[in-house]
Image 1 (cartoon, rainbow, N blue to C red):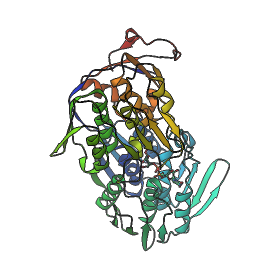
Image 2: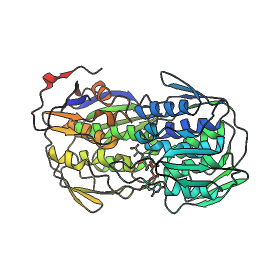
Image 3: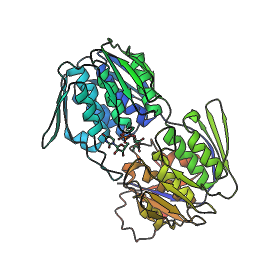
Image 4: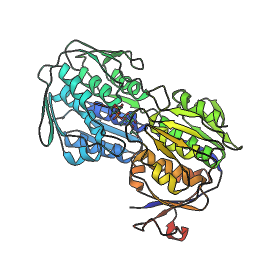
Amino acid sequence: MDSILICGETPLYGRLRVQGSKNAALPILAATVLVPGISVLHNCPKIEDVRLMCKLLETVGCQVKWENHTVTVDASGVVCGTLPSEYVEKMRSSVIFMGAMLGRVGEVSLKYPGGCVIGKRPIDLHLKAMEQFGVQTRQTEEGIVANAGKMKGAHIIFPISSVGATENTILAAVYAEGTTVLEQAAREPEIQALCAFLRRAGAEIAGDGSGRIRIDGQRTLHGCEYTIPPDRIVTGTYLLGCMAAGGEICLENAPAEELSAVFHVLKRMGAELFICSGEVHCRRTHALKSAGNIMTEVYPGYPTDLQSPMLAVMALAEKNSSMTETIFENRFRIVEELNRMGAGIHIQGKTAFVPGARRLHGARVTAQELRGGAALVIAGLAAEGITAISGRQYIDRGYENIAKDFETLGAKVLYEENSGKDSRQPVTAAAGKENR
Ligand code: EPZ
C-alpha cells in the first residue's frame, strides 16, 4: 500500500473546510434501514468506513447511490438480517446494524466484530440491552444470531457509557412497543446527530445529549433529507497539526462548540484560538508550552480519539506532560513509532509520560490504526527531515485525504508507491510522487 512521505518543519498557513463526521455518518447510515423509504444524507465523508457501510446496506437489500458527498439510501426493500462476515470483520462498527435490523426485520445474524489494536472492544452491553427488549440472542462459532419477536420498550441503565451500545439501543427502541428510557447513556455529539436524523424521519426521541434518553416507539418513519455534521475529531487533528508545525490556519464549518475540552489544552500550550461564525482560527508562533496532565474522558471531556495525535504535539513542548487513557485498554500502541522519531515517551500503566523538549527526526514508521496514523502525520509535520508513514489504509478509514489537506496548508507531502521497504532504509523523497 502507498506510504505518505512528509518533509517536516514547514509551518502551515491557509484554510480548509472540515469534512462530515465519520462517527455520525456510520450510525445514521445504519439507521436508514429503519426507514421504509428514501433517506438522503448530505455531507457524507468520502472515507473507507462509509464505503463499507454502503456495501453492507446493499447486502441487506437497500439501493444505495453515492454522488459526491451525498448518499441516497432506498430501504423500501430491506429483506434480510444476515450481515456478511467480510464486512463485519473489516469494520467493527457494523455491529451498529444489530438494533436497526432487529427493529426493521426482527432478526439479525452477524460475525462477532473483532477487537482491534486499541482494545478488545467487547459488545456485552449491546447484547444485554437487546435482551432487555425481549430479544433472544444466541452465540455460535461464527458469531451472534438474534431474534426480536415483539420488542417491548424497556428501562435500560448502562453500567458504563458506551457510544455504540447507546446508538444500537436507540435504533432498537424506535420500533419497540411502548416507551424506552436509557440511563447513563453516552452524550457524544454523534448520539445527538443520530437522534436528530431519526426525529427528522418521524421518530419520537428526547433527552439525547443528556445521560437520560426517552424513545416513544412504533412511530411510522418516512424518508427525509439530513446533513451530516462536521467531524470534531478531524477538526482537532488539523488544529494539532498546526500546533506541531506552527503557523496559522483557519478551519471552516468546524464544530467549535464540541471541542471546548480540546481548546482548553491547546490554549494552555500557547495556541491563539479565534472562533467566529463556524470558523476556528488557530495561530501558534511561539514555543509550545507543556500540556500538563491530561486524562481522556467520555464527552464532554478530552476525547480518546485525540489522545494519540496529542502525544505527538506533547513531545515537542518545552516541558514534560502526561496523558492518561481511561476509555480503551490498549491505545498507546503508536508510542513505539513516535519514539522511533525521538519522542522519548514512557508508558506506566494507563499513563504516557512525555518528557518534551524533543526535536523529532524523520523515520520510516507504520500506522496500525486510524488515530495512531494521524499522530504519525502530525509528528512528521514537525520532524526534521523526511518521515515515511506506511499503513496509509488505516488513516484513509477516517480522513478523506489527510496528506492533501495538509499539503493545501503548505506542508511538503508526497506519496511513495508500493513502499514495501524495510524500516531501516533511509527515506528519500525521490521515491515519492505528487498527491493524487
Ligand atoms: C465509538 O466507538 C467510536 N467509534 C470510537 O471512535 C470512539 O473512540 C469511542 O466511541 C469512544 O468515544 C464510532 O463511533 C464508529 P464505546 P465504540 O462503546 O462505540 C467498552 C475512531 O477512532 N465497551 O463508547 O466502540 C469499550 O471496550 C473510533 O473514530 C464494553 O466494555 O466505543 C471501551 O473500553 C475509535 N462493552 C468503552 O466501553 C460494550 O458492549 C467505550 O467504548 C461496549 C463498549
